[in-house]
Image 1 (cartoon, helix red, strand yellow):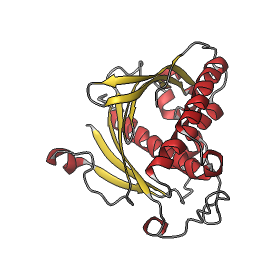
Image 2 (cartoon, one colour):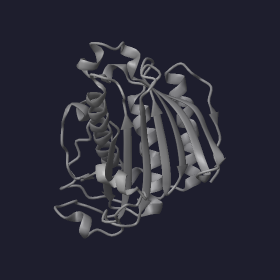
Image 3 (tube, rainbow, N blue to C red):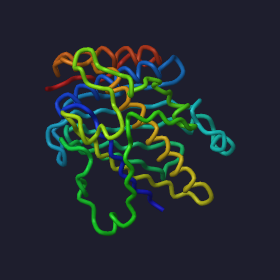
Image 4 (cartoon, rainbow, N blue to C red):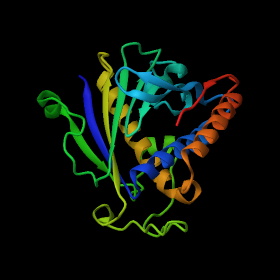
Length: 266
């Protein structure tokens, strides 16, 4: 059965700031998680004129995450079952990511994101049908929370206490109870995750595990977006694209794949 879940992550920054923050966070987290045996390989990163998204930045990546596979999965699947192929179309403030797994050929996971300058209260921003709305679940993710479970442990955990955090460069923080209703500027990432693993006996369990993994990744990555605000604040799009180019080559060199088709367009 296809699982549909919408995660709403409110952030204490503007839409324009978040675009820079998100790009910086992706680069830094990819560098932290990549070694000679595991991590991220960037195949393509280039501007594209897409029929659906129009002008966007297209990326194609391979994620090698063998060591992060849950024990129950490794009992019937090889270690390379967690090699994932990702395609993404970034037409900010609208983005789409499609993840497939060569080992599980019927599996698909799609993340559609719409970013809005609100505090997470907009309804049906993805324009779902009545049938889709009937099965969709909605969950708010509070970046001030530091929950831990298997997936947060596997992904890595930012231990920063946002109830005591204050940005030196912007003065934002701390994030106390109800901060989402008081902070300005504010924006929300509405992430619609659709996962389908039509395999008898373990498909539902795999879908639930992947939803939990996506949730932990959303929490960790958005905690980092804000926690690293004094690093990225004030950067221009040109500066972040230049860093991204350097990062792509560095990643591929680490994992032994030195070539990448990487161009950018502001």
